[in-house]
Image (cartoon, rainbow, N blue to C red; front, side):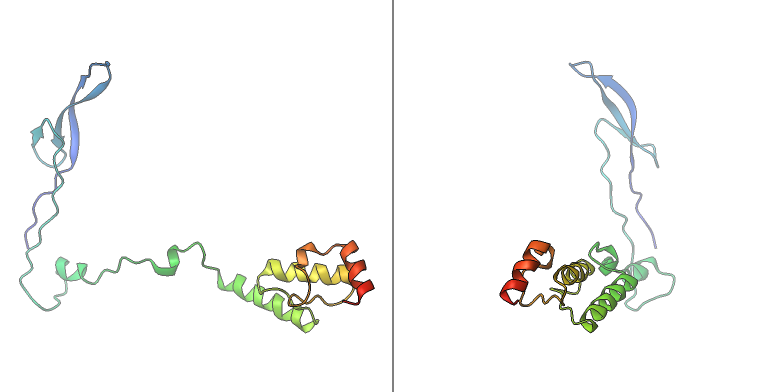
Length: 147
């Protein structure tokens, strides 16, 4: 297996431009004696790969097994199992009390519980106004009309 050298640019000399700003005048490579007026182009390593089956210790074979997708680990939408279970437990407890939250999120469950306290009866997210909008005045009107 042979690899071609990959140039990594470095600045060897500086000069002043027409606005008296310092700019690079000469470039080089950190890994060899290359010098030029332009930054060296990075070249990708070339790997000779002559066999057709996986060979332990072969870099080219190992590269073919790498997966670059981080999956759910990179998602900031992912919820921890502890939080997920906590929300579902809170929802189940609310349902056991006769409360019907608008959803299973902790926010919706808490809002439904507060609405139930304000109403003096179990909140039903399927038939009543949004739980976060219910005030004592709304509760009084709802009792008067029989909701």
